[in-house]
Amino acid sequence: MAGFCRNAQGVACLGSAALGELLDRAAVPTPAYVYDVDAVIAEAESLRAGIGLAHLVAYAVKANSAGTLVRAGCGADVVSGGELALALAAGVAPGRILMSGVAKTDAELDQAIAAGICAIQLESVEEVQRVAARARAAGRRARVSLRVNPGVAIDSHAHVATGHDEAKFGILRAELGEAWQKVDAAADALDAVGVSAHVGSMLQTPGPYLESARVLCDVARARRARASLEIIDFGGGFGIDYGDRPTAPPAAFGSAAAELLRAESLGDLRLVLEPGRALVAPHGVLVASVVQGKLSGSRRWAMIDAGMNDLLRPALYGARHRIEPLERPPGGALYRVVGPVCESADDFGEHALGDPLPARVVIRDAGAYGFSMASEYNGRPLPSEVFVSDGSVTKLSARPGVETWVKRRLDA
Ligand SMILES: Cc1ncc(COP(=O)(O)O)c(C=O)c1O
Image 1: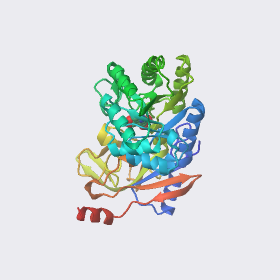
Image 2: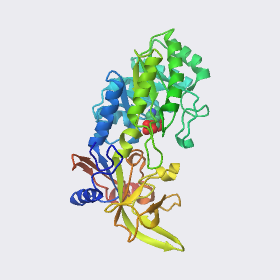
Image 3: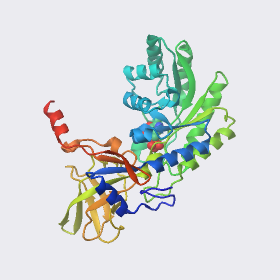
Image 4: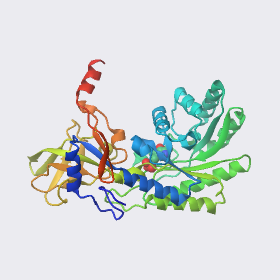
């Protein structure tokens, strides 16, 4: 797999110098996200081929909503009207889109019903009647699936564990009977096509994923004894190795899921997987300029022009990303790398940047939950985005100047 971020062996392969030249040639202002589009497409294709084309890889758009990536050949898992509109506009067929989310507004439900998407994932008993009412009002039928809370706790940061019994997501197993009853009572408006689960993010091995999937298979079998079912959606959550935790590749999760379905004698159902992070995170980097160093007591700081508003994960989850000089290999003096935002949480941890400090650094594995979580906090415009294919820049969205932000806030 070609790419400047990592090759199949995990080694950065379009040398840092080449990445620097590419950014200089395109005159890209930092901070800048740079994505290897070919690697994302290859990752998605290999997962799709691995599980079989009759099944569906529904890319979790929240991970990175760039149209280039949404168009990479997968279906889409969306969680808002905005993401739904984007997926449709990017050319994803409605029959390959699922909508999750615990608080879908009436307008968002109307949008999904009008588009005729593959399934609206119902996350509560209360939502059953809301969707039925919106479908009746539109004079249409809505395809729905029940998102089951599998009651599986995973070894991840609390903010990314979603399948335990205290989570706001999904319907508890104990309440499934009531949910199905309500779905069946609304058969004039609802087509109950599936069941789904999403146990959380950053899984290192397929173990907890399969634990949740087994619960879902039991739910599917019980439902099938009484009614028909088309799809079974095991969710996303495949982790990646951010440099410190060896992690199974997406294909390992995919083949384990397909195998489980066969072993559970449910192989005729359409399997849906909803990976986000694993398809894009390793294939994107955030390049930042070093603004200045600071020696304070015994601590050496490197102040960079990317902050928590550009890459929130370290402040939000305590996540650690590898940070290396752009134009030379990492090594030498350790620096505490921090951004410009006026928050102590704006801290990317200690990294071997060496002396003298490099002019630019590259923050690795930033392709997912990077730009999509970026904000304009502290009056800082959103970062640049650069899309690279076959070694050339194919698309560039340069960081806007401050004028847009000033105007919007002035008018507020
Ligand atoms: C319902 C659902 N599906 C899929 C995903 C994607 O998860 P990941 O990016 O960890 O694969 C998420 C992430 O929050 C989610 O909530």
